[in-house]
Image (cartoon, rainbow, N blue to C red; front, side, top):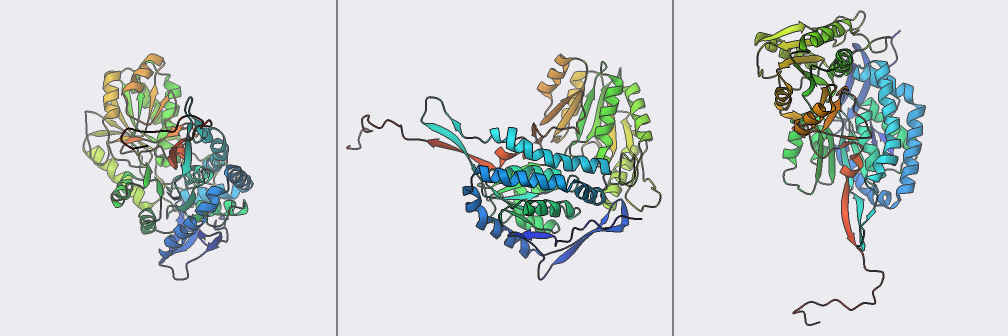
Length: 501
């Protein structure tokens, strides 16, 4: 028997402290599971006017939430964490069916949401604590920006927005969240848990809708900051739309074409397992996925052979079935784009070590593919493959003569999000760390295993301002310099030449 649709009973929007639907909708999001297109998982009417209503509610609540004080805000967020913990299973089920990720991975996503509250209230808060300055009657204070727009992605519809919403609220900002039109349900769960935690009306607001809803939110005149996670193309459009608003924070966490550098002295089995996980987990639909392997000649043949064995053994299947490692891609269009790019690569000189292609999963009509590995037989620059984020389970393999050439290949990308280095030598790792241009770097670890206790974000076209990770709170705060009057004001009055005083 198929699971029931994951809708939780409330309408899709949450504005000014209540779940609501637009009286005159502009359309309706009808979402079927990418794991089985016959399974309905969400129905959300939307209206563009809801964006205005949500921003107005956030602006109205802004002063009182800022003045509520950090202890009161902490208490609400701790109650929110309790509600997330209590609803772990239904939230995970909603994510698994709506995204298509295996249930074990969806549960891990909810666990990350729960853990984010502790990180934000603990280590994260240290980066926005008032700092007195030695030998100066002054201090650095961190003030909220005001109304924050959080525009989230489909691949981690709970964890990634949650990682921005929680720090923004702790700092005293109010929030309007617009989730991906592909995954509305996780956002509804966030709103429900915040509502049950006693968050005051208007402090958090949710609007559903297509890309146009997001564009209206990110260009709204009463928004003070934008935290966006998604594609580089949409991030660039947000920047263009706000070219005349230098006062507005635009913090972008965009895509990647992440490289794993494997050197001759690496631990072959550990490296292969870490690279395979980073390439194929979440069906390759992570911004931190490894999509390029750059291996030196001494290890490349054996490493590619082992990766091919792992790729062929991966179980692709329905996300609620046991022992499934990889579910479907998010849509038919995403799968078609991946397969077309792979065909172009093979036509222009890449060898299909593991061909990939569509996968049939018995009893389920979904967007399934097999993992793929393609090896460059000569230096290549194939448009739509070598430096395009395909967001699918595909690994391109390149051979480099030495570590210097490997670094050059890793840097030969318009992206600069994450990289992994596999070597037993700390000195060689530090050489790579000095030269490779990425925001997140791993030594003998998967590129897809970032920690919420560290900064997260990229260079080049991978983004700016570190809107995720432990520094997310600092991103949505204003560092204010405050000079105070001396405690002892018995000294001479100030005077300056030419003032006549």
